[in-house]
Image (tube, rainbow, N blue to C red; front, side):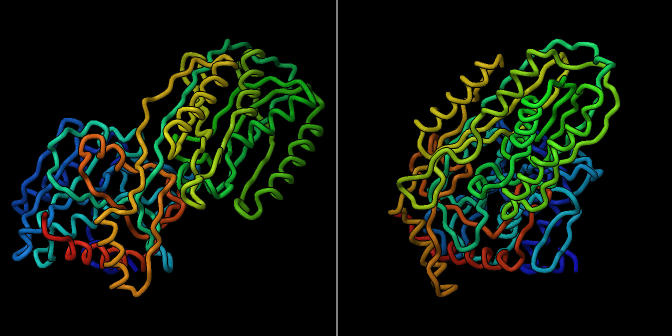
Length: 486
């Protein structure tokens, strides 16, 4: 079965077209051009702003002209992650989709249903003149995944609606009315490159096989963090024997829990068996600890060629100790909403950079602004304490829940009418653009919902097919039930 055989046909047809358009964050020109041509082909009014967001407007269906104007909002960029053995150029290659039983996934890469499925739903609404809706704007934002700059830089007046429906949630049957704010804290560790001692034997330690996932939506699940596991191993090796660090790499994106990490170290000749035994013991410990959440974890040590250079001993020691001590994962739970993660931090990436620099990238989230700043300060000071040159982003605000929201009430009633059951009303620890929209459009009444996605921001990302039809029917019912403008 192909993706175009799935139902609802119109929505999946547009999603299929979207998967063929490369759209990494900050490189959305081709998808924006596609949307522009879509609008022009249907004689729909559109506008593109300075950061690259595009809004397409459609007049109300006959008899719905007096309804409250609605904005359907989704982001066009996608997280670009792939398995290490997968050859794929996200700047040029289309995503290969696979219908796998009840799920739709990609072939060794992220699927891009976050938020391509939201984009496809909006296009399907715009394309169908039989759908009942009031005055409609479909807002497609850029660069959501790496900084939310599209939402951050949107100007007042670019959209006109009074209700915003965000199509970027990942659990069918759950209506979201709040989200965490976030910021990134990054450090650069400068080191002296020294000639690699030839008397040492060199080995590569590789952590792999982890699920990874969204650093907001999946942070509560107890998943393994490859960078933290590698730091733990190096810390334990350092307690048992002296070693020289030649290289260290792990993770990729700030909003993804890292799945793989590796380091090359040199130890005294003849200590191979001791090193192997130590790493294997730690691997067994980790396998037991993660057997419920990350059963595929693999930690191996193998011989490596002698490198040309190693990192100076002082910097290497401070770096390993810093990575070992850095907080990671859930920091605190919400006292307002049961089961909601309030504050977290993710040790996202460790990268070797040109100019003898090692970059350590972290991200912090919280639904409480003061706690977001607090955990950022903790991470900032710890990185600086160990010699990093640290910077922190301005971040983005959270979205405070409003249980009295009129659009929430309409959304819940539409769901009950369709499916005969009460949907869950929640806040989410992941970041949504809604908080940023409120800064420019404080009058907006907002809600977020979508189909079921799992393991987003990783090559295991998948979309539950049956929930797409439920999401689609729900969206159409909500648009039909939008009240008359006051």
